[in-house]
Length: 296
Image (cartoon, rainbow, N blue to C red; front, side, top):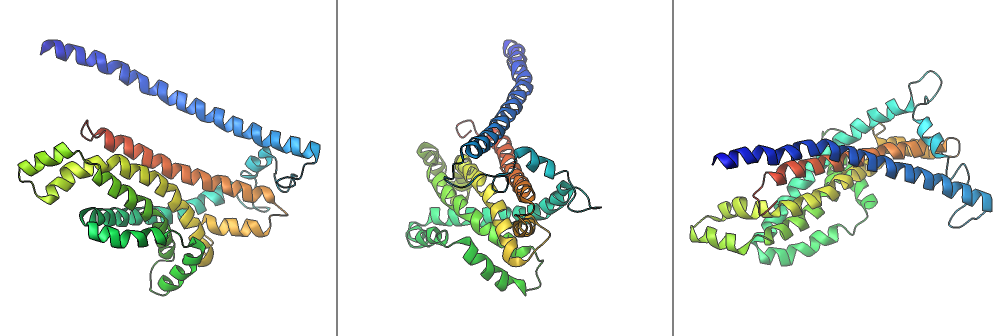
């Protein structure tokens, strides 16, 4: 026992020193990728403008503004005497984030609940799952106005219909992967629980749910970015000007005068989606590492 106690800290020490190095590598790789994207953007512009190629589209300062102009536009004011564009976009991002987060949580809960029900009933799965799949074939732009009309006059907060639209895009991946994850539980573990006369509830939460975590988190990564997209799209028919959807719509109307503003807004929207994705990745590392060894 003493030998084990003495060896264990020495084994953990390199792991403790490894995470800062791993973080630096990830940051360095991110900067390299961003630099490569910047170089590709500028190289593409320079080549197409120098040769006059028009396929797949004409390249000029209107269709592809310089990357430096897009980034610098974030720090320029919307108009004389107003704060920088980045401050306004951050405020709008916070509003859209609330809608997307509410939709993400709502959609994840609904998707997980549907997955559990369909996992336990083969009859419901055969009869109901095709309609779950068919729900995703309807364009979200066709559903969004109907959701706004249905919920707009119910006394709910103005952002609630948008959250429901975000939930609509979120629940499907969670439903499918929940079913797949629950079905993937170790048969020997299920037999052991049956030998102990465990209830269906105990089997679900002590065996099947831990086994489904990798599948569920894979779906949540997809749903995280989809919730941001759903929130932005849902703001358009809702006439909400406080979010990124309203900013995109406004800057789209004046694109010919200020194309860099729309591209800058797209950058902020992409950053919001990446932040949602990163939060799910962090939660996955914390939760799955704490799961049983055969699951993690």
